Length: 162
Image 1: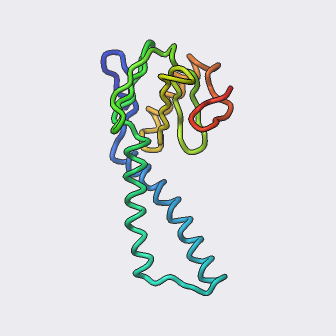
Image 2: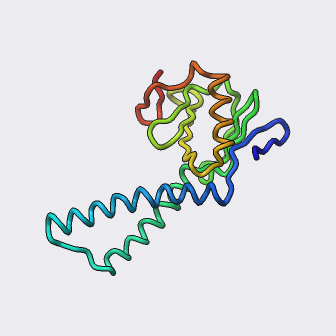
């Protein structure tokens, strides 16, 4: 269900979508860790102990928390005139869509770049896998329908080109 409040649409999180996001992060970390385990065991002959493997719980938990705080805003809402982003650390951002410079997906994150290239510009990198597919689709459809010319072809850091 896509939330609509006062003409605003917003990205919606559910317990299942948050678990999907966490599962994505943990799945990638586990894949890299398993590859490293077998590499060290077969090539170097140094098999990890169960206690050593258990210590990975700490950085895995930290990685999930860091990704959630940095890449999942408390609230991202939009209507035909404005974009509103409330982040966990960086406060609140409100701007008209005329300030949108670029949008798109540079890898595993989705980025909205607003404002001027130098100065007061802000970029928001979002981990969309923490939100419901319906609300993500609504955001992408809105951007495709209204700002197809601002979709970035590629990214250099947080700045879109295209």
